[in-house]
Length: 281
Length: 173
Image 1 (tube, rainbow over the protein chains, first blue to last red):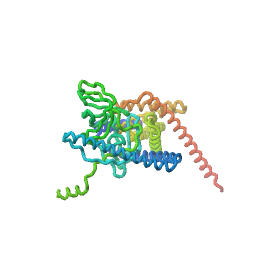
Image 2: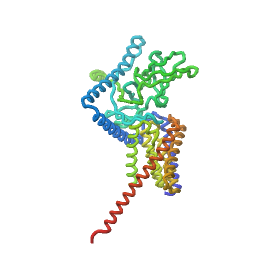
Image 3: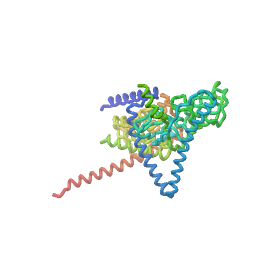
Image 4: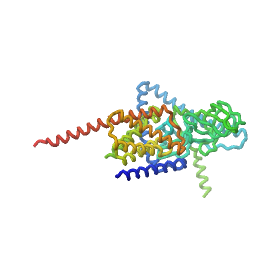
């Protein structure tokens, strides 16, 4: 190909990619394109393979070093801890619901939810473009599904391709969630502020906010149900004339991410569904 | 054949990147193997394969990053094309010059990523100077290592082919 045509082709490629980039940035909530899904289908299994191989090597090493009996007991205890933490997550939501009912505010908390484990296949928490890729299994996942760690919320699913899903972390600068200050009973908007940091916006300066106060999800953003632990207030400074500038430490430990779970709405009992469908006919 | 070689290299680079990230969280900040692959393709001096190779390598990096899809694709495409144009004019054999090419490519890519992030308000943070230096240095080292390995492999392959050809010519009468 002559140099002039090559330069024209290069120019066309650059302009095409600028358009691709601009369309992606202008509408970040648009569903992923076929191109993105194709590349995710190529990279995610490789990430899964590496994670599985690495996990297997680490496990073999541990098994060689410790006695089998101790290891079995340890595994059982770990499973119990995970189960108890899941239970605590659930109880946290229920406690808030009970509190609301006791106050007689008439607020209704969303229906129950179940946690489904997912496997982390790739986690880049430090670079400029933080990502978490999950193997969500054959049941798949859906966009905007909440993702939790044992200790609290870590983000939401933004892209799904087959059994692979990409998660937008809460600490991502583009991420936001509606949250509630547990003691002050004030809602605000939580924003990502870079690695391991969150910021809380739109809390008026008249509201007294104490360092150490816990934050839970407010349940009004259509992504996270009410009452899930999000973080703890670490600093309160005067921001603008009207609002505080509040810094939050995430509840989930992003530097040491253990098992993660997808949050799914609990299905109503099947007999109830059957009865409703019969009545509707 | 060249396309198959490229795809195999891309798969190896992706696996190495995932392994690096699994072992050390700072790996994606300090090392960009996709860029090394793009520069390796560009060093052959063919502009068209270079721009497409850089673009595909960048898109693969994009699928593993949380930023908007196309950010690395565009940056790596430009860097690979520029490398190919430079390779048409220059014959580089000294190791120091080779390292300088990889380092310059890493620097150019980082600047392009920052510029694109700024232009499109992609929600990306600018890397600290320390990480930038680490990335430039690691790209130079990885590029040198890759070039040395590819050279050794190529020499062994051509030697084997030469021996086969010689055996075929000296068949018993």
